[in-house]
Image (cartoon, rainbow, N blue to C red; front, side, top):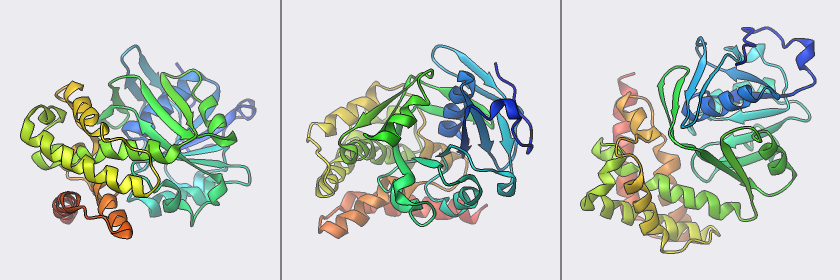
Amino acid sequence: MIDDKRGDEALPTDRQSRQTAAIVGPGSIGGTIAAWLAASDAISVTLCVRTPFDRLVVETPTTRLDVAPRQISRPDAAQPVDWVLIATKTYDVAGTAAWLAQLVGRETRVAVLQNGVEHVRRFADHVPSDRLLPVMVDIPAERDAPGRIRQRRRGTMEVPAGSAGHAFAALFERAEIDVSESSDFVTAIWQKLCVNSAGAVSVLSNEPGGVARREPAAEIMRALIRECIAVGRAEGAVLDDSLIESVVQRYRDAPADSVNSMLADRRASRPMEWDARNGVVGRLGKKHGIATPVSDTVAGLLATIDESARSKR
């Protein structure tokens, strides 16, 4: 167990020899990653938060992580670090950029751990593109309360092959998160988008992942995945039609009470990442002249739900 919480104070000098990492957005994914990095005791971790919480506790399939990494709640309290890990929602670029202005130094690498296929484009105006590392994340985790997370199974992440990807993978050598380097990262993120796009059925039905076990819901999932594959191929991804049934089966094999992040946001009346997970299929489809009627309809419905939730905040 580690307890190096110092509020907004600077790190003590005996920790300066370790690599430093700041996690912006310690929700279900960011919090899980932060807990594993802090538990390794090989990296000095700082959480960039809106509202500080007591401890970070993650229940994993094999252990219970209970750590208290340093937290800061103001960008002006931040200092440059070796790594910035962005785990905010895809729509919160402006809020994230305020942190990047303070955290990014001349040697800082920035890993973007977000949904969708536009990782680099989102932050290219704030960080040089050659220092941005897109990361495909597959960590089934749910936040029960601030600082309280359940990790459903061993997580995986995928990064582009190269020196930056290799250095990122090394951060997780002691974590129950497998990081692999891909020579075809475009295919990897489009495969993940196929999974995420199908998850919209849970959001629209307001039911957990078990809804995929009912054939009408599964058929809508298949249509969304089919359109996602068509657009992904136009973007350079190598996607086989067999992905359609494998994604549906993945949902059917998962715990029936699994709640994806967008459904969790809908139920909590929070803004949703509908554009990065579903709207992008139609946007890029238009670019290539590919019709995406199901994705467009689903994105429109999600946007309507999202607008209603935002209006009540």
